[in-house]
Length: 387
Image (cartoon, rainbow, N blue to C red):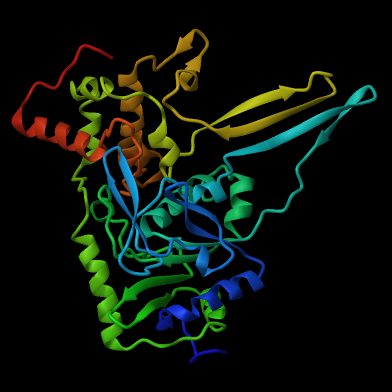
């Protein structure tokens, strides 16, 4: 044991110089440590070899349709908001083989991928993304139909959360009740504190597994003033959100306004590119495709990520049932904020703001909700003949 006795729910201090010990402890247990790193002028998630791979001294500026990576004046490890990627890239495979087959005499032999699911340690998971993972757990693990690939990966995950102390220009997790402080889905939660002559982390131990790992990391019990400092940083972050969304009866609001003229306004700008769904941490649309080699000896069926903004996604015999940009954007936003609640009991939006940042034409989901709500209050015309 490298520090005092650890109990679930306890707060301890880990100095910046000792954080590598956490990486070592996770690697020793067979985890592939993945987390944020700076590459291609953005914060992306990838495998990390050491603390040095983190985006040290980096921050980001975000607004509608705008993202810029910048240098900070300090050596913060987690001093940014969010990049374009979410953790679903590790849990919900972007592409996978469902089954394969090859000719075998007069019949065929079914082939299967027997590769074991990797054990990931997610380092630097934000609260909004932890809520997104919890949402996908409801869909792929807790429901009537279990996704075996997702389940096998999810069961092996260790989570090191990071409480946000920097709010992004498009963040609105405080409005959605999903942040900035991590409250669920983690083993350890870190709050980074930089003072004039100190750089340390307040660490909350949430699970027994987290306590076991942290026992191999130099630490000491947190003093009251250190806990208060960390809590103060998170509280200030919640007060500096770049966006807000009023979610009062939002499901009923959208159900009443399928014919609202605002859908024409947003459709005039929407490129139906699907960026908002690719970067969304909860979107999970997929398609299934069959392939056969030129010899006709082998075939396979693959599942890959898809987006509901394509014409083909809603194609059934006779054509697409959502042929206009208006109908496709309305489907996406209404599903995210309304029908998702009926299906899964939670909102499909966690307030991360990625869809705003990475929309090429800066369509803002918070602005669209606000516009529809304001029109109801002002009794402005809401009906459009277009569908």
